[in-house]
Length: 620
Image (tube, rainbow, N blue to C red; front, side, top):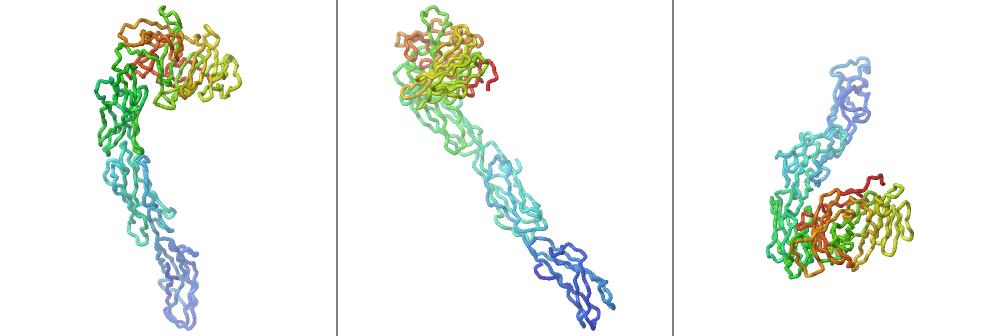
């Protein structure tokens, strides 16, 4: 192709005394005329006088396109012969144009990184240079630190994939090869496999460029979960017996060692006073599913205390792709207490963890000469919302949040009231501890009063007053609530009060509402009870609701409420004047129906919990 014009020779059998000119033309072939591969005829060829040979010049185009050898078919035009000149044989010829151009093939990158869960990885082969014919290559893979049949390729086949006869067509500049990735459940180190490029069959004009090898890194995307097992835990103060804490890891894989920490954190038990806030390391060797450690961090004192607990938290190294499970609680049973039943006779001294006081208007016991309340505490969970009251046409939800010092417990920082007004409308009222301003259907009423269709909301100094229609109307036309925003010891919190709630349905529910108009029987406690406070008297409380099973618990009659008001209150729960735990903890008093988890709702105005009593309406 680069040699210049093609020069086929024409022969005259005898010399002539004069010049003889004949014509040659192209009649076909695989080459393209018109200047693409050559310049088309016809061509005039002259035999000078006295000579028997003449050369034809066919101009050849020297391009840069990789192509096969191409041909030009030429013939002597008989009609162009002068008189006395006859056409001999051969009168036709074939001109071969041998291509000298090459192309280069290579991978588009020397390295690539993919995630195990991507399914496949694309290896791209690039052709550099123009081509009119296909280029065929082979891609061969081999193990690096990854294993064929386990990490890539075909599951179970130990032979690394080989991709033969990979063709790059003339109208393509690249071709992709897909290598399967095997996604397992086991956490492992990142691994590699190798791709090599070759030209098959060997072609001197197909040059193997760089990179002709690529290293594929497979990033593992699996995580393992580490959880407490056999939790919660309980131990008796002063018994000098370590308790066994076990963790499980899933899935179990043949991996390097994994290490996590267990950290003891404060709840109702006080660190360095009731327990040592230890941090211990737990190790999992390859293929080990459970690892245990003995803890002996409970401090034995001589103080008579309520049952207390602290939490154990799993902490994992950063970047380890280990997911910690839920915290586990450790209950400390005080060794200075002698009691059968589970009541404790001391008033709450912790400002966190919302406490509730409910007047027992339907108490069936003539020994009480004045209205007696029930005092109990719901720890709840920070960042979640729980229902306080659920009735036919009103519900009240409370958002819990951690105190500024989270170890001290939780507080209520927001109240949401959903009520049906007398016109059938849906009214949402929200009060935030930050300003105590009632927000009615998105409008804040700071210096004004909302009063429409039986619903009113207004802000007073440090508190908000909310009144909503009473579906039952047995005693009052409306229900009245106070949302009091307090600052106790530098901690802002909400105290929710029901000023007028005797008209709630007998089957109302919620953490507070379930005690209104419910038959309650109080009887003497006959077990052994030890206390230095002569004012504390234990009783057995029996609650007989309409739609949930009867339940009993031990409560102590204390002649002041938790806020030190001089009125009697029956304190219930396992500790701190009425702590209600999840029933998986021991001991537990069934003060409320179910557990506090049964009262969790999805947002401040939602009613999606187990004991919902709100009548369904089409509220936005």
